[in-house]
Structure formats: structure tokens, C-alpha cells
Length: 280
Image (cartoon, rainbow, N blue to C red; front, side, top):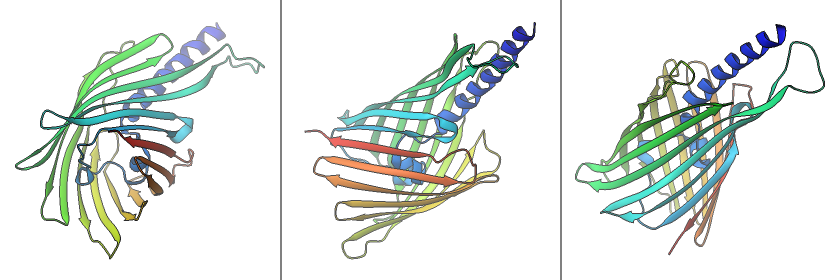
């Protein structure tokens, strides 16, 4: 009876865990740049060259994150896809009696597959994404769809502004309850000020998320010098503050970036390494 109760309570606990990942993994940075500066709709890059990219790293509480994407010009804009995989492994099922061996070892996984399209319009750069989502715990699976939409507008050759809404959609039920998607609304701006051979961009962003109390505020700078890129950022919310830094290097068709974040959560040090290749 004690074992049955322990199994039931453990499944309930880890079901709440996958709900946490389910509502959180779509907000986890998927590349080194996002680890440092987050998502800022005013800093969206628009290039029509074919680009292949991949990233891997750690998030809080031992969560592993990996992504793979491809973009190229098509239909008057840029079209592409991105696959994001998040996993929390080596979870152990035990009784309340101390034992050397666990009853079972399992993991919680989540997957997002994005199809995206960007086009320069009369009012600015319009970005749209359609996302398929899948989450799994033991033999339970939840799936769903979501869309993102954003707009970046150039005020002049130095000042950009942007606004985006992310994760508008729904999920199927996991056991008896539907996971709620983290709807995010982000507004941001960036200001470019080159100094001789050094290109600098200051940015700020405000985010309202359905899973975070209050407003998230981000500020930072991105600097390009020769073949190097330096990134620094800070993030503040009601309960958490963090600082981030990163570095990138461009070697011909290859571009490598590394980002790290130090925060007040005391749940680990998020960091990520990414590489992209410009294809012919």
C-alpha cells in the first residue's frame, strides 16, 4: 500500500514537473544569443543567405536544451524551420524506504517544431511562426499548436522598434488536465551607434508573460569588432535578477557563439554554445 501511494504521489509530482517544463520550455533560450539578450523584436536579423544553425547547452535545474534550424530566401522573403528539444533526464522513482536501487529511471521531454516566414513590408519586417508542440512523461503525451507574430519597424537608420506575441495556441490534455502555453508579449527597441570600426547596439525590452508575475525588463549591448562579437545583458523581474555575457567569432562562412547567464535563482548556471554556417 505504501509503495502504491508512493508511485501515485510521484507520478502526480512529475506530472506537475512536466507542466512546469511544458509552460517553461517555450520560454527557455534556444541559442547562445538568446541566453544573453533574450528575445528582442527590434533585433531580428534579416538575411536572405541560406543559413544552417545548431545549438546545445544547459538551462536551470539540469535541463538540457538543443536546437537545429535552417533558413533561406523564398516567396519574396525568408522561410525556414527550427527544431527545439528539451529534456530532464535521470529522474528516479523510489519508495519512502532508503534503497540502493531505484524502482525506475525515466525522463521528461518536450519538442517544438517551428515553421517560420519573414517578409519586408511597407510597415516593417513581418515575422510569423507556426509551431507544433509535443511533451512526454512516462507513457503520457500532450501535443498542441501555437503561432507567433511580430513586427520590426525602422524609425531611422539608427533606431529600431518592435513588438511580438508568442505562443498563441492550445494543447491536448495530459491525463486529465491541459497544459497552458506561456503567452508572451514583448516590446523592444535598439539604437545603433558605430564608433570608428566598432559597431554598437544598445537595446531595451519589456516582456509580459502569462507565467511570470509583473513585467520582465531587459537591457544590454551588442558590439561587433572585426570578426568578433561581444554581448552583455541584464534581466530584472519581480523575483529574479540575472546578468549575462557572450562572445562570438566569425571565421569565413562559420559563426560560433557562446552565452552564459548568472542569476539569483541558485538553480544552476545556464550556458549555451552555437554554430551557424552560411551555405552557397
